[in-house]
Image 1 (cartoon, rainbow, N blue to C red):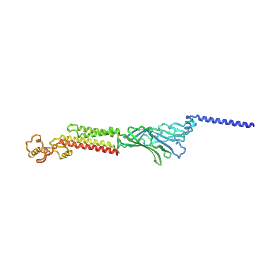
Image 2 (cartoon, rainbow, N blue to C red):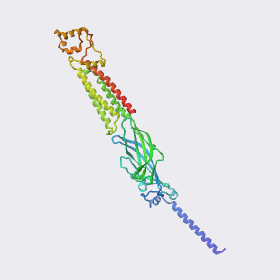
Image 3 (cartoon, one colour):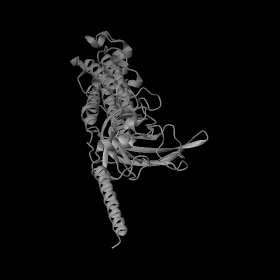
Image 4 (cartoon, one colour):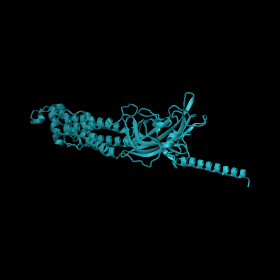
Length: 434
């Protein structure tokens, strides 16, 4: 064997051994890198202010999902709606990706949202300050392929037009509109892959029932460009049991007591007191109803109008009760007008019949002016006796007294009050059901 060939072979084997050892050393070093090393390598030259995309002409796609937790409050006075929810916002960062085998199979890392680029998604119609959802701090998860997920969690309050016409059987629809505050559709594109709001952890409210939700993606033009908008629509229906038991039924029962005012005897002395008490009670309930309604002239609650009309009816009851008591205590010798006789006929009251001999005798006294009449009848003026007793040779008549007129007025008012209450109740429920 040639000595030179042997030396060359030894040199080749030595080089191959050294190269194998070097590659082994490099591979071993890479496999021992930790998550700390991964953070240092990823964020060494990372700039949060630069949009993480490789092609400037393509927009970054951002998916937004809403997970509704509860309906916090609907404020009729402030015209706002508050819900407690968190959003799941996902996008792909082209600058944040790695090979898991090089870092002890680390596939997901957790970072502060302040240290990475985040989409400037904001709630447009918020009642609070319209800040970016990523500016409130928090963390985000990043996988080895660059997919980023963050979960902004807060109470979202939006301005919402509250329609209180059918209170307490009203339904409300409020929208939560999200958009990028500074990036148009050509730069940042919003989408919702599920097409609806998520209810995995939803806690139902004791006052409102969630009936329908919807997500709509649209574009709104601003200036020379357009912005993607995601609208989360929430439809709620008020649960009326509390208001029916604590507001509607008391008002209905108290207003019906106005009818009882015309059934009490006139000589009892409690009719006016009862009427005024009912009037004041209805005034208090009207204040309670209006205190929870918005101060707007665009729309009023139909139930509030009903309470107002019942208050008007109570005021009329006080007036009619006072007139009835005045007629009841009026002196009997005063003449009775024909309109009161018509009122008595309308009330269908059975009148006491005046006997024919008494009629003839009193008529003769009236016509001939005899002076042998004694007692209270002799002291009555001629006009009063003629109004109560017919002329001679006529058929028997019925005597109409002021107490009878008062009774007739009470009866007519009683029937009218029943019709008034029945009509108001029927109209109220017809309007609410429409």
